[in-house]
Length: 325
Ligand SMILES: Nc1ncnc2c1ncn2[C@@H]1O[C@H](COP(=O)(O)OP(=O)(O)OP(=O)(O)O)[C@@H](O)[C@H]1O
Image 1 (tube, helix red, strand yellow):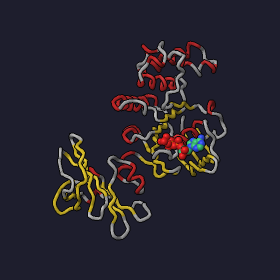
Image 2: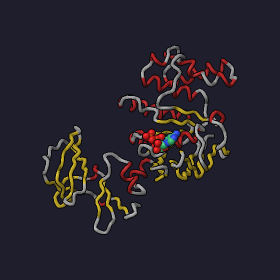
Image 3: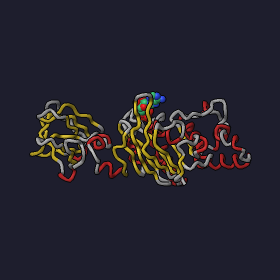
Image 4: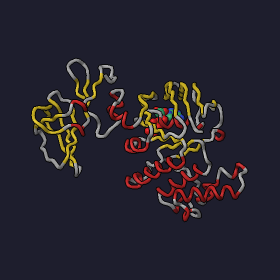
């Protein structure tokens, strides 16, 4: 249970079409991540799936059943927000029970679900505290716990880790991925964090201005981006693009460049030392910007000329229309 299908979804706010004919098949149990630039429609798409918003046209199916006009409460999905959306005046236990108590579920069943989720998320000792007495990471666990106790057919998570500091994000990322493995439930996860997308996703959906640009596994997106937009969006630092005489564009990632004679001549603008690596910002003689991520601690000076080479196998070629050749 938990297969989600989107058929030709369009969503307009007034005259502005923010989701433009999106179709997607998410099989049961998959962890799918929506990524894309700010404003591309990730949250809107998630809200449409959850039932918090209605599409202008198109259909949403859960396990083959059309739920487009079914209310959010009756879709059997659980949403986790970036803001956690916990009730400040209730204890953790009450926050988790809220929602179940309205369903006439026996008290003992509610209590046992809360105990089980609390054990899984290691928040047992916090159950009698209020949200204001918890750290950000603990609050996020409670928000996830509240979703788990509902035993939804799928989880919808909207930037759930973006209020946490970098270290905690790393820990929570791994925990969420492990939780997905244990629960085996479909999860749709919205993020603008590339590392989250690359490390957690079974498949990534890359959106741009309300259109799906590519859907594939993280490594396929990285290794074979379907177009120049995806190539530039997936991977950090960003892929370099070098325009050829014939209008085609060659892409090569900063990690795939190295210093050697007889390569692309560039002039250094600046170098950022990252400790283990150095990110060099440079430009070609045609003023095309180039990033090179080179191992070690290098100290090139501004204006210095370097020669960069790469393996032809690491080239990505795109036509004048931006599509992969
Ligand atoms: N209720 C609304 N009324 C009008 N426009 C809206 C509404 N909600 C979203 N939009 C617009 O729809 C577009 C998509 O917004 P959405 O929040 O889905 O983007 P996003 O990809 O989640 O962005 P971010 O990464 O910044 O959160 C934006 O241009 C936004 O301004």
